[in-house]
Amino acid sequence: MSEPMSESGASTPYALTARGLHKRFGGLTVADNIHLSLPAGARHALIGPNGAGKTTLVGLLTGLLRIDSGQIWLGSTDVTRLSPQARVKHGLVRTFQVNSLFPSLTVRQNVELALSEHAGTSRSMLRSIGSLTHLAERALATLAQVGLEHEAGRRVSELAYGPQRLLEIALALALEPRVLLLDEPAAGVASADAERMMSAIERLPCDIAILMIEHDMRIVRRFAQTVTVLVAGQVLATDTPEAIMTSEAVRRVYLGSGGQARYDHRS
Amino acid sequence: MNRLLQWPSLEAPFWVAALAVVVIFPSDLSLATAIAVMALFAVSLDLALGIAGILTLGHALYFGAGAYAAAALATLGWAEPVSGVVLAGIAAALLAGVAGPFILRSRGLPLIMVTLVLGLFAFELANKASDFTGGDNGLSDIVLAPVLGVFHWSVYARVEYLYVLAFLFVGFQGAKRIVGSSFGLALRGIRDNPVRMAYLGAPVQSHLLRAYLSSALLAGVAGALSAQTTRFVGTDVLSINTSIDVLVMLVLGGTGSLYGALVGAIVYMLVHHLAAEWNPYHWMFIIGALLVFVVRIGEGGLVGIARRITERSRQTIGRRAKGRP
Image (cartoon, rainbow over all chains, first blue to last red; front, top):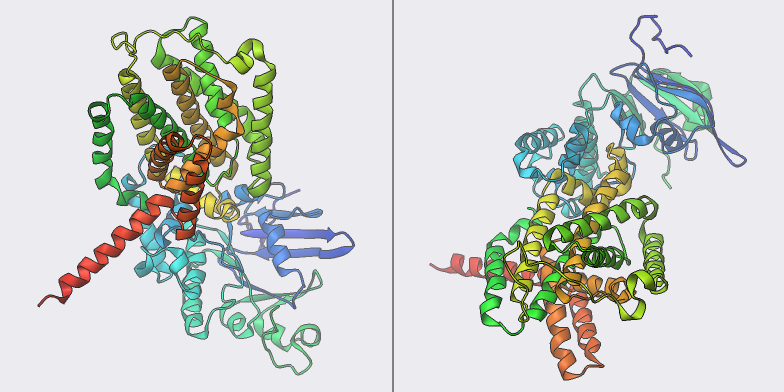
């Protein structure tokens, strides 16, 4: 099949293109003909009620789950059959809804892990990590991007929840992604830390295409240029945040008939 | 920051003391040799289990493979000992290269069971293949040339001890080097969270395999040293007891620091030796009590306990110093 082109027909393809994704678990269809395309620098939010298949979609895109049919492109590369690791090498990086870090290592070592995998130095068995000074410097620079540089020497297991959420993002950043999937980055973050989290997200490099799963409509409105509503494995609508908030169809199935945007109850 | 780097000040005195054993305990060098062999074996297990998180209960497989390879080389007329050890280590690593991809597909409890079953299988195979292994009688016709052509093996085991100590030193430095590299950091990352490592783009299986091969190489070297210095290989080198002994040593000393492997092997072997003199049937009680005590007190084994004590006393000293006018 030919390369996916952006709407203008120019030769720059989308950073991420998903075409006709299908996935069934037994009798349950969790992804039904999903189309999604993110241009470079996109700020795209994915919303939908619990069980709509949002995290499943992230699993399909990253290769954790195998799709039954459909195609996934990163830039002009067809990654449909590639392993999760290979997709990371092509610039597709995700964060986790539940913190997934390295608790016995320090904050800086966590980032160094990501940096050394990205740079390919993790294969060298005999060179001391202390001699890779640029690694330590880049780790600190990456931590500074999310405001964690002062926590660099602390063990992750001693770190509060909010800073751990920020470290999730720092790990992703260290891999220099072209497409970043943020799975509820503000989930469970106390309101005092939520602002720190949002401003860290807003400061992410603007050439990264970001797809964010989020329940909190205030965050969605602040972050997203485009919103996709997912219901029962199907794309209900893709539009600007304003159009989504005022859409009658979306209001009916998702936001509730009151028309008042709220965050739903998390399980 | 790095746990390992908190102990270098004690490492040089440790090696000096290990050398001094030759002068201080000239009549106990056979025991000291056996301790050094087990210390290297424990270091190899720490690399796989403590650092990379490969929960194996069958590491005697590689110890035994090294021992039989060294014995086979010697009986075939390859009398030069140093190259014999190296070749035996490579043989063990090759075996790990065959078994590893199969073993490392599982993690946690299934991994423990797979390694256990493979260990039992190898033990039974050695029993059955008595033409090669000597069965219950073992292999005892191991003839070796002097070390480096100069140092003759002695009845007092002095050459034996220094020979093993040299291999322990090199093996330990190599293991330390691996742990201190970014590969070593990746292994600790896999131990903590293999799923996230995959999502950092890490080749998790290949990292694990290389850690397993390095570990098997060291275990094979330890086994070969055991065969050469005792001039005997019995099927017990492959027994499940051997795997358990080295695991107990490592847990006793503390996993994941490499130093714990040294400390654990020394304490275990000394307690074994002394308690067996006191009561040859019930010495395991002492080891058991010690193990319960160490595990109850908290993580990190004897090395962890020592670290916490030094940290606490340092804090107390610091507080006193501040309190002074």
